[in-house]
Length: 118
Length: 110
Image 1: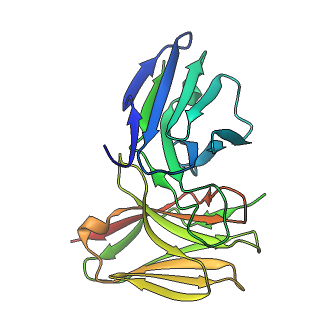
Image 2: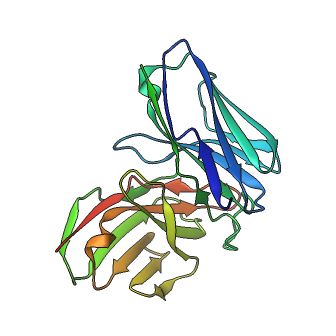
């Protein structure tokens, strides 16, 4: 396996369900991200983990709960979601989450998990 | 509030023409600039990065950066129908994650 792998690719859940999205990267990167992509909106950053530590929580509702057990794996636990949470959830990784023109923050995206909340 | 602005399009160009995609950003201290391509139903993929003023060429793609005017553009020469996609501009400042624009949808007409 190479790159960034996300499972499941498609998920349909009711508002009372609990489910999890999984992301795994095989690039040796140290930073991992969750983004939400809705129609006609920019990519919205949700969470950033750098060396397993959460460095960014972009005012995300508590019904989304991230977990990063190691630098290669990232989860997004979902519970009591709303229909407006239906979107494409993209995982990404980078060498690290710093900037400076070094290219270390270049993102590689997974294929995404298409979530539908009924 | 850091913002990245793109014309949402669609931008339609005939096959073989030059497609010009533009992006402006609000944060003057932005350092890194990226163009991602996203086909319908797929995830974004990096096609160009640029860090200093001027032009950077890679095959049919040229990225242009003007930090004084706070804009970055992407030129696609000899446009092909396979270039039809949404192009996302992304910008970041030191120690902060990328901020993305809404994307410009490009349609290359055969």
